[in-house]
Length: 111
Image (cartoon, rainbow, N blue to C red; front, top):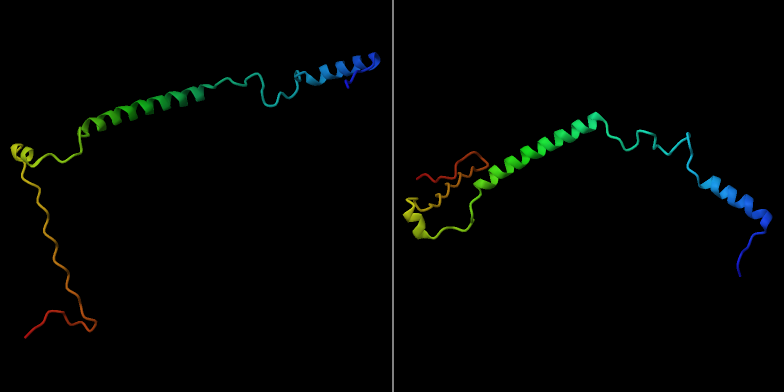
């Protein structure tokens, strides 16, 4: 079953289809005027500022990466002694603070 149009109807249908599918000329182009897609000098300035910022960030990152040691593993004890570094000492634990009694007396016993 196929749909065929009579000859008298085909011409107006095709003409109206052509009119409906055309882009509007001088009317509203959906926000796409003659300046659509063109950048302004302000946009170019912002782009240049972003590129300068990226250059400074890369420079800073390379400085920091040069300071990172090749390995984070602890060196063996023999290498520490050879390098003249003293062995790492653990800090002494801090003395516990005295607990105060609710009535103001100290917890130290006196004879």
